Amino acid sequence: MRKMVILKSSVAVVVLMAVAVAFLFPGKARMLAYPLARRAAEAKLNYETRAMASYETPHFTIKYSPADQPAVAMVAQAAEAAYAPVTGALGYAPGGKTLVVIYPDRSALNRNFGWSGSQSAMGVYWGGVIELLSPSAWFKGNTASEFTRTGPMVHEYTHLVFDHLTSGNYPRWFTEGLAQYLEYKVNDYEWRTADNSLAGRLYTQSELDGSFDALPDQSLAYRESLAAVRYIAAVHGEAKLREVIAALAAGRPLPDAVAAALDMDYGMYAIEWPKWAKMNM
Image 1 (cartoon, one colour):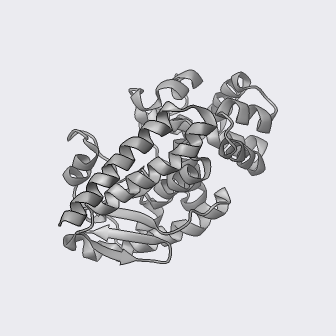
Image 2: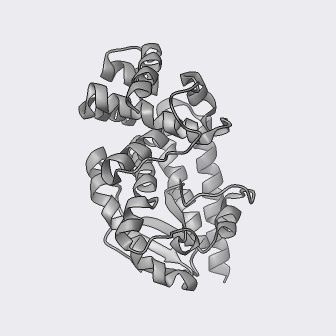
Image 3: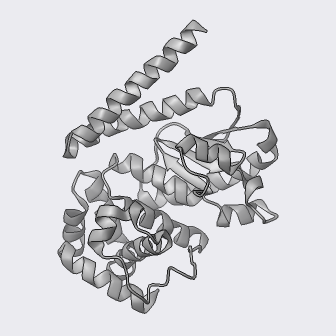
């Protein structure tokens, strides 16, 4: 018991120190510290879920409550199905196994993130870990293949791989756009609602850059992020999208990465992708 208490305290200290370093230092210094913060956060959650059952696949460790045992094989299949297309598209594979934690209901997932009862998600990536709402709480399909196509694994695993590749050097909207783009490419899936048509007034690029998570219509903000990423691949080519990603991985800010890859300044990019999206999406 004493050893476990010391471990928990040590992890908590490392988390606080790593997070402080990662977010107090700018640029490449922050990128060097960021993986330490991520590893500390992953170690913390791995410790906190030590009593949960565990299921191993070639690339994932899945933790779950006994009630969710019937869903584990479905989650495992979706996770492994996401591995090759996501790592192939990004040209990068994280070392070791990815931790996936399944929560039995929305309240359990919300408690872990300190969310109110009105907030919900099927999956969340944070701190090196994919956290999922149990399929039993929301999935209405009948087969593992349906869950693989419509579930959150491609989306969340894209976040994880991209986060590892770039050491956190990206704006929030770009990682959401990229995750949706790979969902679109791999599973032919798009998040469409009655409110996220691109035909009306759109959020500006500065709004996406500065306050993505606080924008009132999140469905529209997410659809715009997909459009902004999809524009790069559709108009300039997949190779140019990879160049943008490589520049982020090298520590360049997104405006510089876009300008270098697309041969247009960021202001022009902010004008061109909405025009393309209104005509093509």
